[in-house]
Length: 430
Image (cartoon, rainbow, N blue to C red):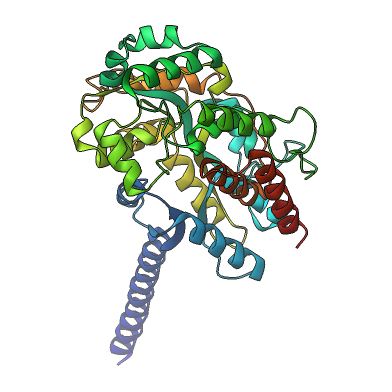
């Protein structure tokens, strides 16, 4: 009996040890499995325009199985208004949002609602981007960065070779660049085209006005928010007067941008040139099928060179996933992915690193007769200076354009100028 009892005790101890070991091993395995499973994170990304970022987001998701990018695309005005409303309310903002350059200053008063990307070590990638593009997203003391740079809109001279040829002007890009190096030479070419072909040089008052406006370092406001356009020698008034004077000479067309009439005019060559940004060529390729091979791109006079458009990507402070959001946007706007965005959607890179990539330099445009137009815009991009616009830029700009439309319709230019200033002041004082 003693032997049986002893065996029973030994077996019980062995069984208890076995159960404990199995339980411990199972707990260990469960713990390891739990620790290896990454947290599933959804990043809400609000944007506007045709960027092609949807495809890049899918690529990122494949490389980061725990990240889901949920994209919402809206019209430009709706996008910025909805974002401003959400930030003001303190709830409902996305994890990531694009900001158009003309709208950026509107959000500076809400700087505390955004993550300072310098806190995310954004300075580590600063040297990959054009200096002027980067600085626009900084605050006045350079210690706060609102967003990372996406595309830019360096301007060039889009010209119809058939119209230039009919006017007896050269048609090769290098020759046209050499022919038109000053505003006066631009004017003389415009008069010759008008005389020989009967066609206007530019499409609209807006295009002629922006010729000088986009090259101004200061336009409507200074950094203190003061309205500058009534000051003597202000560049905005000079740009306005240029458009008025060129219209009097009969070299400005009446084809409002984005209108069906404008698209038809681009298509059939009803005017000679566009003083357009790099992104315009994508629109032309999609809307002027009969103009294939009939346009080329040359450089603009320094006084007419500038930037028109482009964006940044910011992170609202409301996000619970600031690090994951930053990791994604840093990847999204990297030089390699800016090249992809350029090739897929025509977004012109703000990273000069891309300009030296063979895939960038060797790309050609069938629409432009096989010309590598991007090299022209790359030259322009590296000559652009710092520009300050102000939070009410868009509101003021719209009033000046309205005045120019009225002038082209027969109204007195000085009366329209003063009426526009009056409307602007009323808006600003609300």
